[in-house]
Length: 167
Image 1 (cartoon, rainbow, N blue to C red):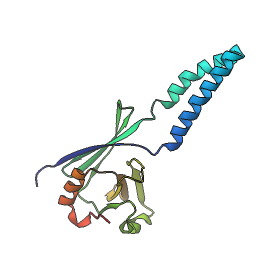
Image 2 (image 1 turned 135 degrees about the vertical axis):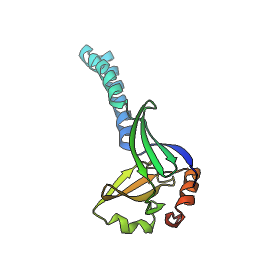
Image 3 (image 1 turned 90 degrees about the vertical axis):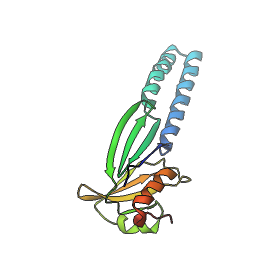
Image 4 (image 1 turned 180 degrees about the horizontal axis):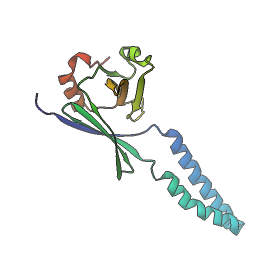
């Protein structure tokens, strides 16, 4: 078969607690600055020192996953703040055992396996179509949770029609 190519970028939305923490820290910094400006120079200095601390704490909060499907390999890369890239893994799809929506009953047999390793590369948003890909990986079974585009799904269906489910 010929080579195929598809790519997608998915923003990580799983970090809801991090967003709430960020909003809380910014609010706390503003309150300390206002109280310090009104009453005490020491508190104002503390508020000013909290500003760079806030920036340091939140510099890696924007995360995206890039999927690159080339022929029979899925490469997943983590992009932090749209600048730094870190390869998460290259997964050969030659031995793909099952691909189904994350809530599918077809995955129940795999999920009870003690050797199952789960890698979540999805946005975490339940409104999006998240799929689980089951494949052997270094003597264990790997479950990749991804959000493929329609072009990626067509390529995977074309090559592995017997193990791709839509239910």
